[in-house]
Length: 398
Ligand SMILES: Cc1ncc(COP(=O)(O)O)c(CN[C@@H](CCC(=O)O)C(=O)O)c1O
Image (cartoon, rainbow, N blue to C red; front, side):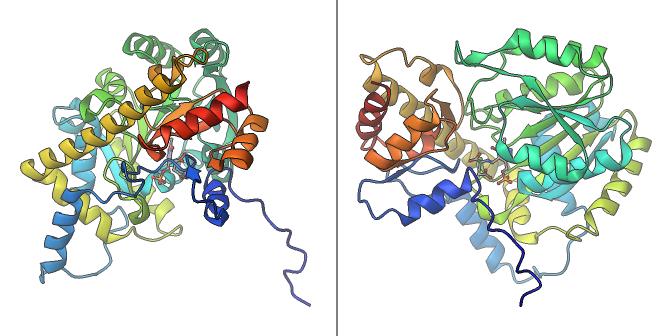
């Protein structure tokens, strides 16, 4: 019999498995609020107009070929990606202290960062917020780091457990890596205020902790690319070191193209160039080099002022639609208890506070699909489906 006969059936992924279940449901009123992927008012995936225009140009450019790109990715993509997150006037960029490698979207960039730290950083403990994106734990554990958590979400207030966060990071072993969601925290939608970020920065620097930012939603939280990057820029401005993973899945709608970057800010240009040389040794045996197409689209948009402006307009429209869905859902639930967290939270997700039993009730009785932790992707909603969700939530909690 098979040499793999002993292999057990693996469970579906807690997030991506929701879509698998949704696809199997024949109900005409089914609603997928699971995966964090933008949908239009008509409930359809969106390819940005600026992306379509650039893609058309690229495909018509007969001088382009499909040769391997470097291990570190497209040079102009890397430069422009660092500029997008750190700002054109970033001191770290001016002083050549940023090592950037193109990654397989956010996930791949986080994994390369994790493997790099496991190989070259003295402290192999990484602190993840509690709760965090489910894949974080697996990415860093498989990279060889010891995963711990720091308090982040306060169920009682459905807001930030700031004291708990400060206590846990305050008692972390010196040098520990701290994973920070740059903006639009997944799954809670709860972000620190800029004042709280400053306190977090002071604590992290005073204990020589190493910040590792995960920026998967830049521009999606507030609608402004620069506003959403303020926390990261606060840290870079103090001259300290950090890692920052970027994803273009959501803010440029390039989900399946797998476009992202890993940036490491070091204390000197000399260190940065040695860091980049070692990043190549992590990437080469993992996937050798990243894909050319998506990164070419991003580079073409970021390097052209008009295309960049067109992108910011479409990005703000996506963020605004999500904010509008928050308001509509809040209005539909206003007379049915305190749901103010729906309009206080920010980004793609609302952390409703519904428990797994209530979630499965909503799936069974209303064909509404969401992750069992009570997270809903606001982008999956439309004005037409808000009443259906509001009714389902109301029935689930009464
Ligand atoms: C905080 C965070 N980091 C990284 C990623 C990775 O995204 P990439 O596609 O690799 O760039 C996600 C996507 N999380 C979404 C999308 C589905 C998933 O991958 O889980 C989510 O949580 O629904 C994320 O929420």
